[in-house]
Image 1 (tube, rainbow, N blue to C red):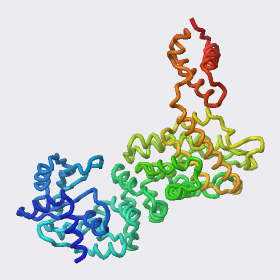
Image 2: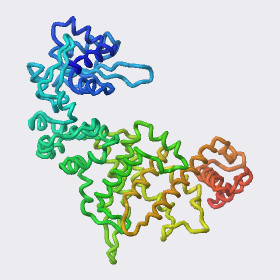
Image 3: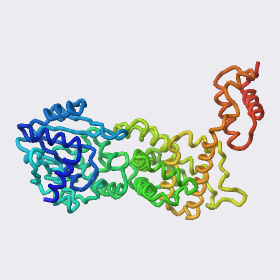
Length: 493
């Protein structure tokens, strides 16, 4: 009874759902609130997507759209489902109201054909009646993801992946019998369209349970089906910087990245305010965790051994970047995320090349943490902007997941100090960019130079020299421009 009262209260409280309750009272056919919306009301979670079912659901959708001054969108015609997007508060994303015709003769049969017991609950909007034929309420209380039968998973194998996504999202445990069924049908995920896989994976990649959920997926054979490229690194040895094979190192990097997202204290302390603000962006966590999952994906295809048996992965950043782009295209992830993750993958070794504190793992006495030039820092961050902070988090996660015999604790501390200093100086430089440039294209024209490709090279070189403290006046900038132009055989008129 408390659950029923909570659902009734929420449906009466929400202004849009209240319209549907009124419509249902006056309709000949019942309309049911179903699935995740009922579950989330019971759990006290925010609802963005409302799902309704009934024999006349599509007619309800058309009438509701007219009341809300919205436009209904047909999502599926073979199993009629209509979506009505409704604008809530200004600046907030649309609320989505989906109306699906019953997939069976009765609501009880419809619920029995759904994926998990916690989603097989319905509330009759015409009269206060809660329908829970599959024991979903008890599973909500016990925190259990339980499939309604093996045939329900086989009917839509994507449900095998959805079980893990819900476990991560809700903090629930997957019932052991359900895991056994998933192992039976996991291979059928290979026939699911990549976009559906990508949608579920994106929802799964939000902390705090990402690494442990991926470990369960790996144990049950699901990860190998949706990301077969990862299997190429299984048992593949690595140089002495690493204590794990390629595949295990990748998964350890994901775990380290999740720790950084959840508790960034101690990472990049000189720019901690900017780091905290960056991590509040909702699009950042899944992108960073996917970058960790793909950063070394190209290693197996670049594996070689020198005559002295030394292991090398030459060019794996470039190969991995193309693989990452292909994988994320397969998952239909947004173009900006594809570009960023590919850039992270291509350049993920460069921070270590710049920040290498020396063979002994200690910065030499005559060098400071700022021995990396500003122009080198700018060239590096130019490739990954505007995700410079996330890029360094990947470097830190990668480093913390590498604990081979060639790595000392002191070395890792020093590397993180250098990365922190690089970011501090870069952010300071970017703040200073509000000042006028020393030299512009118009200045070059006024000095008598003919416009051409060399202009870009000159202006970039001037800003790099200024950032490194080599020049500070307009005349010095013109002198540098003259030297560069002469090297190209160009003289002013």
